[in-house]
Amino acid sequence: MEIVMKLEISRRQFMTGSLVAGAMMTSSGVPRMPAQAAPEGADTAPGRANLRTRPRYHRWHVDPGVDWLETNTGYASLDWSIPLSQAALVLVDVWQRHYLKDTELRGEEIIGDKLVPLLAACRDAGMKIVHAPSPPVAKVHPNWLKLVGETEMKPEYDDWPPRQFRSRSGPYQRYKRPSEPREPERQALPPHRIHPKAEPLAREPVIATGEELHRYCKQKGVLFLFFAGFNTNACILSRDYGTLKMSERGYEIILVRDCTTGMESRETQPTLSQTRGAILLLEMFGQYSVASDEVIAGLRRA
Image (tube, rainbow, N blue to C red; front, side):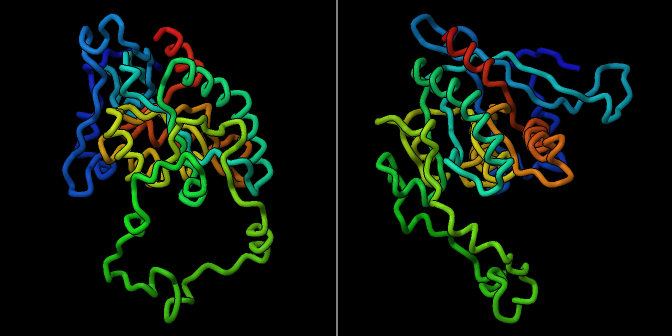
């Protein structure tokens, strides 16, 4: 069940006050206001490039006369025209390797078949591209913006929980997970670096933290963040420059769902359930997804 709805119909009215309202709040507990696509006739004026896209989300409502059952909910799509100057593609942890062979293989296929064409289309259209490859990788790259100082990058901790509890040391060591016998082998792998097929061009920024991404977006007037990269159920969700934290800051989040893959388990690998579940989590709770070919087509019309 997929329907097309105009922008002014917002499912966020349903989300506010729901059991996942925390994902829609700022750190102070104030509900975040979603970034809005430009009203028709304003930023879509002649001479101004716009990205036409149909972001998908999961619609928690059911149609009139239909039972309120999970099985009667489904996907819906919106029809947006986004000012290209307010959009950016954020590449999360697009590295040259992964220690799990099948995860690496899927990633390589996605980079070659999907991400490279998307990257080329974004560059051709003049869309902003931001590389977010993790703090260690960013800080050694010549394109690192350095909008956030080293002292600001250090997390501030309260005195509770106690430091030893957070590190599972001292009297709390018994709660720590056991050491893995092959961890030294994993640590001996070459350092991560940006994948050569996604290497930043001369003027493309590299950021290390969510605060740095926020400051860049504020400087450039960016409101809409298209995310691609790895891994869907890890860094795409949990990095401070990832989808959830940037959504909490008030940005509109669109995941390019065929330009990502998750880390699967023995049980989930045959169906990629971790990947599919992470995408659905975003679509269910305030964010969107879109296919790369839709973005490419929308950019060609820009």
